[in-house]
Image (cartoon, rainbow, N blue to C red; front, side):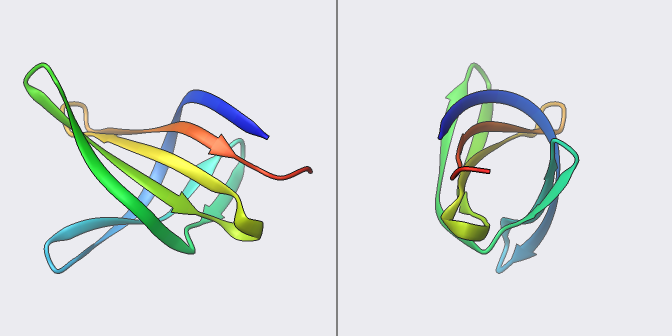
Length: 84
């Protein structure tokens, strides 16, 4: 199921070779472990640069996370999840 969201989430990140990488995040009371970062890109919003991460969780569920350094905060933008 595809969901277009804008849910604030808590994200645990690490820095590898100077790059930020999400490791896990909390969404709807669950902790979702990031098994793989499948893509990342940046988009400008005025003076700010938003950083996006496409990640894969368990059971081939996929998510799009967005980091806004202005606040700083994370948002879960989209989710592609299987049935229950």
